[in-house]
Length: 199
Image 1 (cartoon, rainbow, N blue to C red):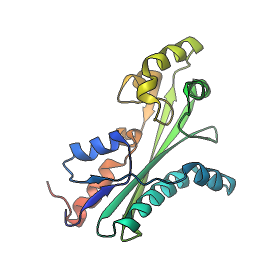
Image 2: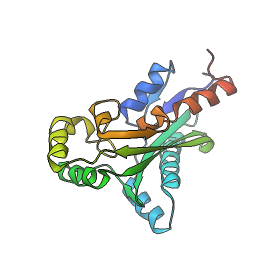
Image 3: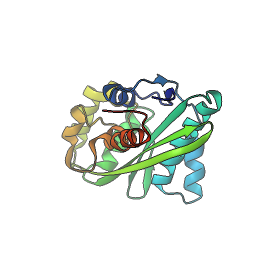
Image 4: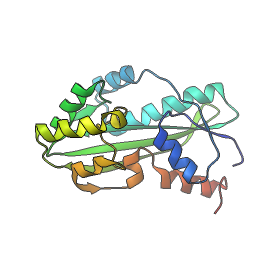
């Protein structure tokens, strides 16, 4: 890398993806009021894709303002089902309600990444995945959350596709990395085109 790289996210899976791809980077989460941003954009009629992109940009910009010498990657993910945008569940009861709503339906995940350099976005991409969840009984949802809650409590949708959560789905259309919360192929391709990384 010609410039130091910072990941402005506390997500363990995003950090693992970048590490496994051979990138050297620092982790410095960009803390913003996601709830306020979400409510504001929804009130203005913003789309789920726009929300994911905006949250990623705000996180990266916040860290870039503090560390202008580095390139900063911000990332976020938004789940939408039947026009409703979901945030991470605050507790297991909310997780149960979310899974009950998603049961038997299609939903979409929007995974955005924005790279900010000296306070200005220089690259962005938002990927979309469509997932179809099996129709789940209340007993199945309770059993799943009993086993998986500690692992999925910080995951939008209350599942991890890389773990037992994959069993909740009958169909998935889209990029695996987008499901994990990072448009990794697109980011790595951009870094390679710029000459920041090589094979």
